[in-house]
Each structure stands twice: as structure tokens, then as C-alpha cells.
Amino acid sequence: MFELGIHIIADFLGVDPRKIARVEDLRVILDKVVSESGLHVVSSIFHQFEPYGVSAAYILCESHLSVHTWPECGYVALDIFTCGSDECALKAFDLLVRELKPEFVEKKVIRREFYEKNRNSNT
Amino acid sequence: MFELGIHIIADFLGVDPRKIARVEDLRVILDKVVSESGLHVVSSIFHQFEPYGVSAAYILCESHLSVHTWPECGYVALDIFTCGSDECALKAFDLLVRELKPEFVEKKVIRREFYEKNRNSNT
Image (cartoon, rainbow over all chains, first blue to last red; front, side, top):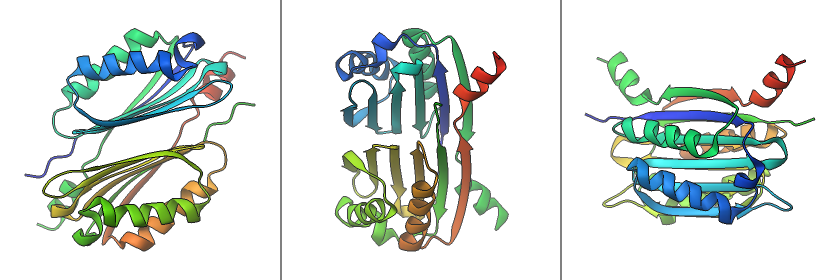
């Protein structure tokens, strides 16, 4: 059976700007979170916006994790898309909340199950 | 005013596996689409899964574009998240449909407007 997984789309507000302004600081947090969540990194890229702000993308065996930050607003846009078990994605989300300590969190969980739905509709 | 943009989440089914099996083939398509859509790439990474399958992530000035492929199922998982104008993201989506010619498309468009909603709720 061809199984997809979940896509967590989250927006954090009220994050300490010092944690999310520079690649060197945010990267330490993200590397730790990805490692502790049990996800498997195959490649990662980071971009430093000036005067502040970071974009990061990790390609995972399980799909990807991306983060964009607007330190001037204390805002973080997070995506975690994983195939297979949901457990690691949910754990990564929880760990990021713990590390970044946002005042407000908006979280959507989307199932990417297009293939199964279409297969079912043809049977 | 702090403006976010849109996040297009799309699933393509029935894509020619020859277009999406290898990095060298898919990269040509993606580079062309990103360029023609008016998006601005700051960094990109690609991973070749064996025996086939590609993950790609572009960090953009406008946020990111990511693609994961399962050639054995003719399946592509696409994300385009852009800040500011929606136009380039929608154009990139249309160009990818034109290039990959999926038999089925499922598309969701999510507005990431958390910040504005919260700001409004406090006024």
C-alpha cells in the first residue's frame, strides 16, 4: 500500500527575536529538534536575510521541514511534511514549541492522501 | 502593515515517471518554472532517492517551493509558499501543471494570516 503522511502547517507568534534573527542561532535549535524527533536529514539549506530573518529547509528521508522567520514581528512560519508514521512530525512540532516558546500558536494538520482517495474512487 | 501570502499545497497524480525519477531531469523543469514565474531563488537543494524519486527545496526571497516525487506512482507532492503578491505562486503552479501534465490535480490554497488575525483580535 502506498502511504502518505501528514503536513503540519504552523504559525508561531511572540517568539523571542534573539532566537530567530540569525542563522547561527536558529540552526542550533533546528538541528537539535530534527535530531531529537527521530527525523532523518539528507540535506539542509539556510539563508540569512539582512538585517535579520532566516529561511531554513531540511530535506528529510520523510519529506521536509521548513522555517521562515520575521524577528521584527516575533513570527515563525513552520512546515513539517512527513511520510509514513506521524509520530516524528508531531514530536518535532512539540519540540519546536518547547524551544521557541511562542506566545500564540496556530496549527493545521493536513493529510496528503490524494492518491488513496483517487484510487478508492476508481474501485 | 505586515503582510503574509499564500501557501499552495498540491498533489499531482498520473505524471510521466520519466520526468520525475531523476534529479537531472526534474531540476531542468523546476529551474525553468521558478525562473519564468518571477520568483527569486536564494538557494536550492536536491536529493536523489534510489532507485528513483526526487526531493527538491528552493528557498526563495518570497519563502519556499518544495517538490517530492514518487515516480512508481506517478505522484508529486508540491508546496509553494510565497509572501507578498500571490501572482508568482499561482503562476508557478500553472507552469508546473503545464510541464508535468498530471492526470489529476488536488490543490489547496491556504492563507497564512495568523499575525493579522491575532492583531485584530487584540484591538
